[in-house]
Length: 307
Ligand SMILES: [Zn+2]
Image 1 (spheres, rainbow, N blue to C red):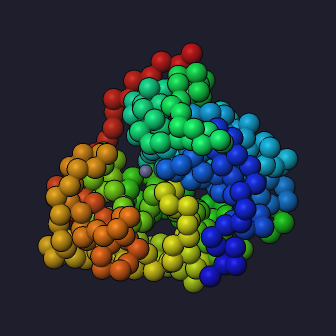
Image 2: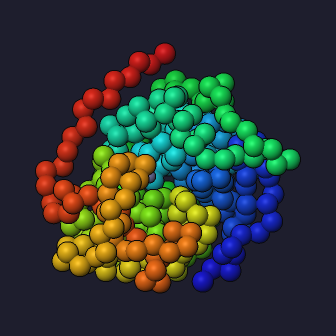
């Protein structure tokens, strides 16, 4: 496993963000329930995900690096892309653009509600709620498309490679860092992989995505996701494939449950702190209408007023 897994001392803290260096050239930025990552080369830095857009992540990142920053989102959800509004531009897969402009993900109210659902503490340990004054304004976002195989060249031999892993959303990508032998995986594959959401793929499609992801596994050892602030082993992908097979065969635990995205079925019984009882590091929540392939639903109603 990479040497720095587990992180070093916290080196910066603001009301909204904490920064922890996890490799020589990588800093994890933590919003409490969600994490994003700043990877530095010699010429540029890459900010992988941007959190909710509560507080000013651009200002925070500018204190972590003097390099120009390129921003990429692993997918279009409320807790990953809206901080990009502070930059005015983002790289993301086009399949998530309509989804990210849905009110829950892009509207100031949706983002504030999401942020305030979890507890946040000031530096001296006092709980606080964000207000509308803390919400980054959407003054227009320039979106550059990224696809499987694209590479961010950060200089000094730091190359970060895009792998498309549709599942949690159709536009989900993960970012492979061959130097540190890790993947920054967003919400693509974890102990609570939600596939029951508007914008999720079917289980059949997700299994194909994981098989594609697995073809890169010789290049990395672990995955840093968007929720959890820890590196999980790459066997998480094998666990996911196994669970997809069980769901497709009707042999999973299929435990009925409610999630943030509505009702669903949990594939494998859960123990303490979300860890599945079977001992692996992947679990899947799915909808029984979204197991077998079906036409890709198109999101068309995403009304916006730009000011
Ligand atoms: Zn997500």
